[in-house]
Image (cartoon, rainbow, N blue to C red; front, top):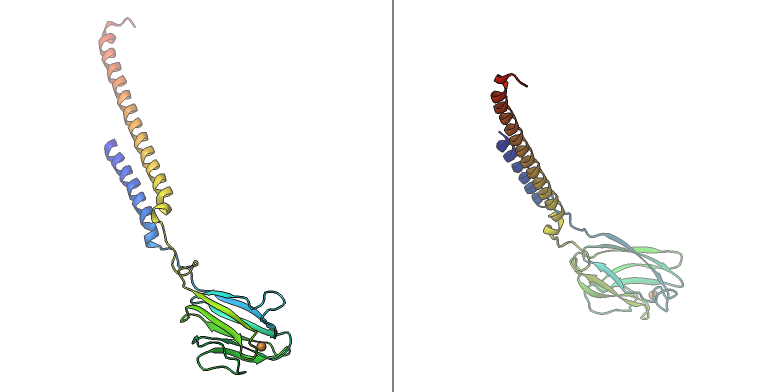
Length: 206
Ligand SMILES: [Cu+2]
């Protein structure tokens, strides 16, 4: 009877361990998605953001939707991203193959949205009017900086639960063993007591 109960408890503990082990597979950790980024650039003839960080390098992750807010600190500018990598063109208009904003002045700030899904590597961003306004736009692969794939050490994830389940199973086994032993001892005491009773009672000198 006790052995059967012990088997059931042990089986349950093992089942629990298996379930815990399987949980990460049933519910995989969600991957990090690309995000929306907002970048602010102030157009100045001497350089983008010249008063703080001139012509800053813009670094994003492939898949990011990048909104660049554009304002002017002096005169007319136009933001362009050299998507076709044919070099910066200072013609005052957007070249075919590039992504450009509208032209803007201090009184007409604007913005341009760049979808980086199909971009990869280093591009040049520039002002189509001023050759001093050129910077780098870097699109990193999604896996390089906490992008879409997260390596998972499943063993490390389940190890604490596995340890807990094992400890539980061992505890249950020890408890069951102790209970069984105690019952055996009780049975022994009872049976030896009965034997003594059988021997002494008939004399009537107790
Ligand atoms: Cu400009």
